[in-house]
Amino acid sequence: MKTKLIKFMLPAFAIVLAFSFAFASEGETASQIAYYNHPILGVQSTMVGSECGQGGQIACQFNGYQLYAEPALSTELRKN
Image (tube, rainbow, N blue to C red; front, side, top):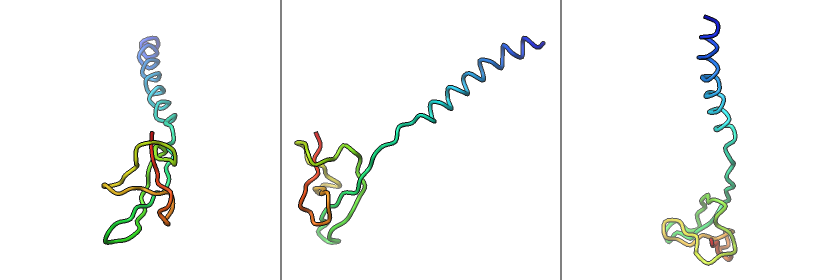
C-alpha cells in the first residue's frame, strides 16, 4: 500500500513542482513611457515595451501616431 502511494505521489509532485518553477521564472519585461501628439487631445502618454528605442530604422507608432521619448516631442522612438 505504501509503495503504491509513493509511486503515484512522486510523479504528481514532480509535475506540480515543474509547473510552479515555470511560472516563478517568468522574465520581467521592461516598459517605458512614450508620448505622441493627438490632434484633438494634445500630447498623450502610453506604455511601450523595450523594443522601442532611439536607434533603429522602423518608426514606433501607437494607433498610427509617431511615438517620442519625451513630452517635448523632439526625440523619435524607433525599433530595429
